[in-house]
Amino acid sequence: MATKFRKIATEEAFSIPEVAKQLQAVARAPGESLDLALVKGIYDQDPGYGVLNFLEGLLDLENARLRDMDENGVDMQLLSLTAPGVQMFDADTACELATRANDRLAEVIARHPTRFAGLATFAPHAPKRAAKEMERAITQLKLNGFIVNSHTNGEYFDNPKFWPALEAAEALDRCIYIHPRAASDTFKGPLQHYGMDSAMWGYGMEVGTHAVRMMASGLFDRFPKLKICIGHMGEAVHFWLWRLTFMNSRAQQTGRAPKTKLTMAEYFQRNFVITTSGVEDHLALEYSIKKLGVDNVMWAIDYPYQPSAPAVAFMDSAPISDEDKAKLYHKNAERIFHIKPA
Ligand code: 1WB
Ligand code: MN
Image 1 (cartoon, rainbow, N blue to C red):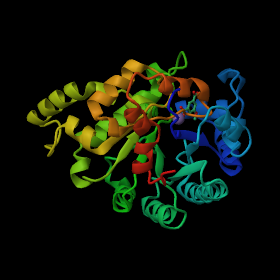
Image 2: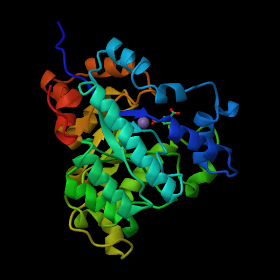
Image 3: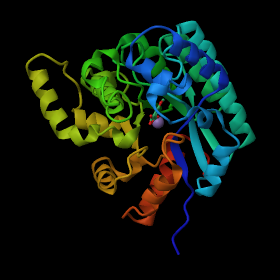
Image 4: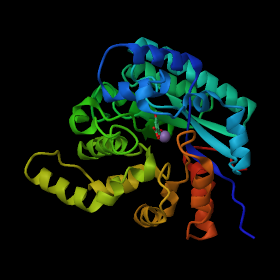
């Protein structure tokens, strides 16, 4: 008989009615950004986006979601406010909604402490208030880490304006999960057709670019203990470590990039962990484990955007030892997100 593992899914999306309502208002305002297309599709049921209806699944926490978890043997979902989080709102609205979403998250976890854990959201564009909310989320609400949806107004974490939030995460010893949002408008030209703006390709470009900017800027010399998690099998960044290291060193030699203490490969292996969300490919998994170490890869579904059954089947059938499977399914998540072992 197959071994039974505790299953903690680590990139699981939810929303709350207050955020959904404000995103509907965002969707109805004029504008042409790639994010707007995504938000229109989900929150304003833009028929141009297609037939998928994710909103119901995002807003439900205790009914269909728990049933889906039960049916698929998923013990726990690590919940995070879905993309674009609060990052499309003005700073005041963003702070207010982040507080509300974190409160709601803590309430649902309190009702189901064995079924849910959660990542706190914050407003990167109000960095000092973000740092305060991050502290409250960990010390008072007992949440497990942080979620951010890549860029904020086209700017990335290498920009010092965001550093109070990074300082807070490092001081609190909690990981920041960088989830994608649609690619920033700078990428818009070639990404606006064929559905390439979001999950198919834009997400990976967006978060991959974010991660590379952080490493190339020398940010991790300033925040050596900062832990960043990226989903979708590391957005493939670790596939490029050899070339990133080689070319970054060349950019340093020619004065186009600042000198750094470590190489790109060393930063990625020290400061990043990844999850398998939305990539059910055993060869990619095997490469990830070999390249990053089995302690740095976690299982995720990406509920409700991805169906749970195939995500479970993917991990159950992975050609790896039971010891490694236990790490991917729950032990790494327990360590990295401070989740109490069962
Ligand atoms: C999709 C996937 C849409 C994700 C999303 O909107 C998010 C999609 C916020 O598959 O269309 C996701 O988190 O992977
Ligand atoms: Mn996701």
